[in-house]
Length: 150
View 1 (cartoon, rainbow, N blue to C red):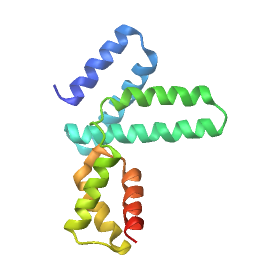
View 2 (view 1 turned 45 degrees about the vertical axis):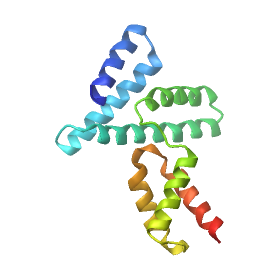
View 3 (view 1 turned 135 degrees about the vertical axis):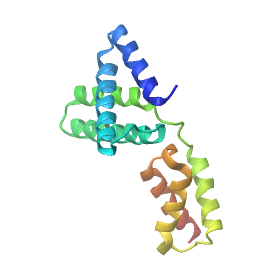
View 4 (view 1 turned 90 degrees about the vertical axis):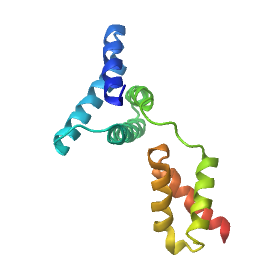
């Protein structure tokens, strides 16, 4: 069963359970997937759907932060509940230890010790980790790796 089919099955289950928060999150996700398919003029594969899910999660995190800053904890909590629903469609995330190993491996492989090659390392590491790690976290860890070497 593909990711798109799994999302549809979960939507049906949430309808039966009358889980309005999860149902709303899934409906919005399906809409975003449909829009991406229209933009692409074709069906999305699982990897492309994961990118849409990741984007949707990022939007909700931003919204939750803005709601918290505005003193609307109730709305922030709703966004965070939706994030939990969507995160189950993401691949298992790498631990910080696994990311550190990949960074060290890439720095050694590319023989890079200077911060001016930050972009090359980021590109190589992100190619390896794909959707299994947040780009901000990887960036922070690459910077730490450079700082540790100096």
